[in-house]
Length: 184
Image (cartoon, rainbow, N blue to C red; front, side):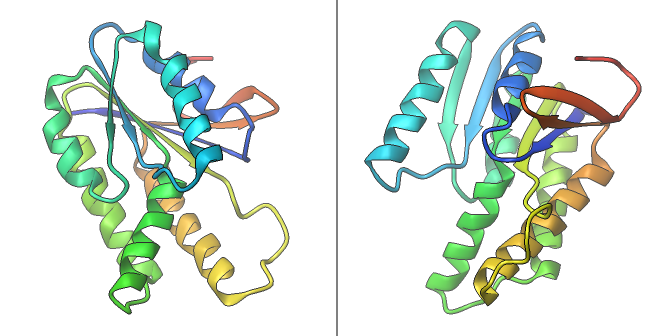
């Protein structure tokens, strides 16, 4: 059964770098499960920079914007899996639902997150998940943005409760808020 670690924080807080460092402290093979689609040239540059940052760390990368469950089932041969990030995963689920004229709601996100967590628990090693904490700012001014914030909040709550360890990263400094081992 996997040890599940959730790393959260604001945008550009240092979450991904901390997650990568935690993963690289583990021996064995590593899978980076990327949820970010290439949407424009600036995003493409960001993704390439992240790939370059992982080159020395014995990483394989799989890009999967939606179906984390299948990818986690396929990832059993890796000692460590890093999912970066759940925030974009929720965005991608919303986009897929909108293409079918459906609206993703909190119950659906909870169910999808529970399915993902069930697959993660079956992993024999470490599963690290990165997400943004989006609920600390002002209330968004439109319905779609409020829904997005709420769906990410629901996902984060589900994963946080299920995780063995949870870290909050702010200004590049990780703070362990759940779990007893000191990995910082």
